[in-house]
Image (cartoon, rainbow, N blue to C red; front, top):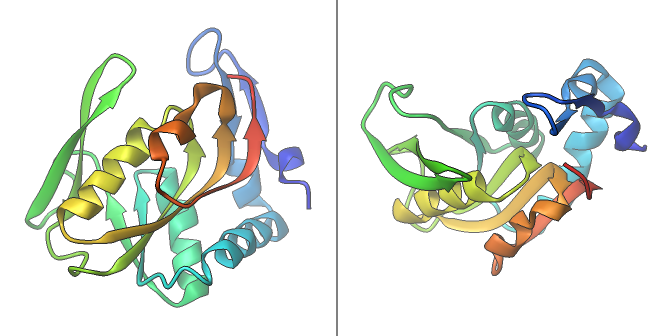
Length: 173
């Protein structure tokens, strides 16, 4: 299946000059959603994964589907103040400034193998923050999987040493 045909391109969103890659048509179509889940699952099957982690918000959508398919638990990573229990946090770099991510302090056991699943790899800032957070609480990041990768933003370069998969690659913004 050619997932590229299911990704909607919206020019000048969220601002002029950006070509937004919208994954919601994949989620709307059961066959595309199942195909996406199966492709990520196939990649992760031999990685000895214990738990799936997904960053807010679209990482939740794909991460939960993959976790269910692999019969694993799912751990959300959220923006500050969104998780009700004790959390660990990490600051991460954005293009202009910093942001923060949080995870429940009891969500990953020391030594557990983690796969991070998200919709998009762009500059790599968010996923690098997620990997630091997982490692901070004792998890091992065994794999990173993305539906889309924007190759011209070189996010993969920040992820050297990690196993990285992307299903669809674009070389434009």
